Image (cartoon, rainbow over all chains, first blue to last red; front, top):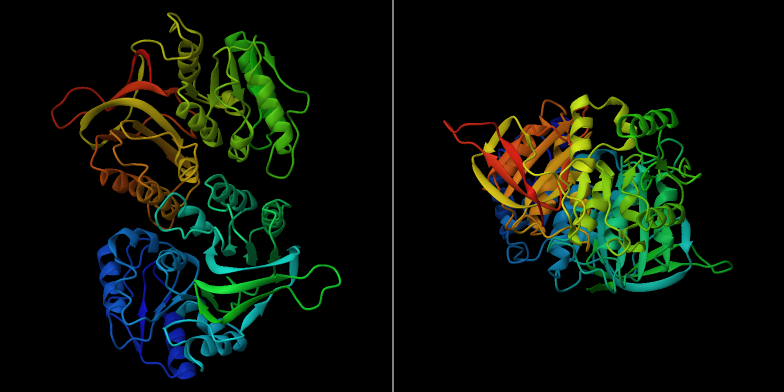
Amino acid sequence: MVRVVAPSGPFDPDLFERGVAVLRDRFGLHPRMRADIRAAHGYLAGEDVRRVQEWQEASTDHEARAIWAARGGYGAMRLLHRIELPRLLHPPKWVIGYSDITALHAALNGAGLVTCHGPVVTQLPRVTPEVLDHLEAMLFGEPRPAAGPGPAPGAGVAGTGVIRAGSASGALFGGSLTLLAHLCGTPYLPRLRGAVLFIEDVGEKPYRLDRYLTQLRLSGALDGVRGVCVGHITDCDDAGVSGLATVRELVRALGVPAVDGMPVGHEDRNLPLPLGSIVTLVAPGPGEAGPPRLLFDQGARA
Amino acid sequence: MVRVVAPSGPFDPDLFERGVAVLRDRFGLHPRMRADIRAAHGYLAGEDVRRVQEWQEASTDHEARAIWAARGGYGAMRLLHRIELPRLLHPPKWVIGYSDITALHAALNGAGLVTCHGPVVTQLPRVTPEVLDHLEAMLFGEPRPAAGPGPAPGAGVAGTGVIRAGSASGALFGGSLTLLAHLCGTPYLPRLRGAVLFIEDVGEKPYRLDRYLTQLRLSGALDGVRGVCVGHITDCDDAGVSGLATVRELVRALGVPAVDGMPVGHEDRNLPLPLGSIVTLVAPGPGEAGPPRLLFDQGARA
C-alpha cells in the first residue's frame, strides 16, 4: 500500500488519475489518499491545515510502504515548521517526489532519513519505461537494505558532461536548486559539508539560477561540499544566455569534482536518486574510462 | 559631484542618458562615471571585476557627495564578498537606488550606514515631479544632519492601507522582497529584530512572494520585527490570485503594525526612503486620524 499526498500545489485531475493507474498497474500498489486530495486554494492544494493533516496521517500509517507526492508546484515549505518530520516516519517508508518536494526531502535527509528523488504521480504517465524500471528496483527490488529505505546495491546513473574531473564520496543531498536556495538560513537545509550535492531546475532564467547559487555560496552552505551533480536544466535559457552554461560556470568555480547531464529532473527521463544515502561521484578526466556517473554505494545509509 | 555606477544589470543607453540629464538639469549635479559603465556581459553590466573596481573607485572618491546606481536587474549581490562596504564610504556619502540595489543597501545598513532607497538613474526620466522634490529635500536639502547622510527632520511618506493597526519605531531596513529573501542565511541581511521592515516587489507571481516571506519567517529573520510597510506590489497577480493580497495575508500573520500602499517601488511614484535611519510607522485604527504613514524621526540615525 502506498499513500498519495499533495503537500504542494493543486494538480490536473486527469493526469493524476493516469498517474495513479501507473502505481496500480505497473507496480501493483494500492494507492490510498484522502477524499480532499484534489482541494485547491489558490496556488496550494488546499489550506495548510489540510496538507499538514494529510502528511501526518500518511507518515504514521503503519500499512504504507511509501508516501508518494501527487505534484510539486509550491507549498511544501509552508508545512515544515508544522510537522514533526522524522518522528512520524515510523515504520520507515520511502518518500517519493521532486521539485517542490525538495523541501520535504531536505528536512527528512537532514534528520538522517533516506528518501527517493523521483517522479511525482502526475509525471508518471509520461516518464520513459526505464524510469519505471529504476523506480521498481529502488523502491521494491531485492535485496532490500535491512534498515529501511535505501538504494539497491551497485545501482547508479550516468551523466553526459564533466564540469571538473575527479571523484568524491559522501551523502547525496539536493533537488530543485530554487528550493535549496529558499531553504538557506532556515533549519531545513541539510549540512552540505562532506556531501555530494545534486541540483536540477526548470523555468528559471539564468540570472535567477545565478542568484540561487550565489545565495548558497554567500551563506556558506557550499563550504566543504565534496562534489556536484547537475541534472536537467530545463527551459532556463533567456536572451541568448544559456541556463546550463550559467550553472556550469558557477559550479566549476566551487573547485570540486562535478558532472552535468544527469537524467534527473523536469524531463521524461527522470531517474530516481536515493537522497540521504552514500554515493560516489565519478567525473572522468581525459583518457579515463566510463561516463560521468553517480554510484549508489551498496545501499549504505548516510 | 555624484558618481554613477552600474553594479547590477546592463541598461538601455537612451534611458540612461535621459536620467543623467535629470541629475544635471534638475539637481545641478556633475555626474562622473567610468567610460565602461555601459558594458554588458549577459545579464550583468560587465564582469564582476569591472563592477567591483567601479564601486571601489566611487566609494573612495573624496569629491563625490553620492553614489547613484544606473539600474537594478541582477548582480549586486555577486559583489558583496568582494568589496569592503563600510570602510570605503569615506567621506560619508549617500548611496541611491532600489530593486537589485537592495543587496548593497542591506550590507551598508547592516554596517550602520544610512542609505537612500530611491529611483535608479534609468527610472529618473519617468518619476513624478514629487519624487524629484523629495529626492532634493532628502539628499541636498537643509538643514543637513551633521554626521552625514540622513533624512531631513519631519519628513515622511503616507500609504493607503492598514494591514494591522498600531504604531512602531525602529531602524528602517528593507527594499526588494526578492532580494531580502535571497540574502537569507548570508552575512548581509541586517538584523531585523527591533526594526521596521519595508518591502516592495515587481513581476513575481504570488507563490514566489509567498516563498520569499516564508523563507524569511522560517529563517527567524522576522523574529522581533516591530512593524512592516508594504510599497508597490507591481505586476504580481497571476491566475486570479492577487500578489498584494498574498503579501497582506502573510504580513498580517506576523502580528505587528503594518501598512500597505506606500508609494515606493517599481512605479512612477517612487518616493525616497532613508534606510538605516530611525522611523515611526503609524497604522491608524478605526476612528484614528490621519493616513497610514512612515515618519522620518528628526534625522536620527540608527
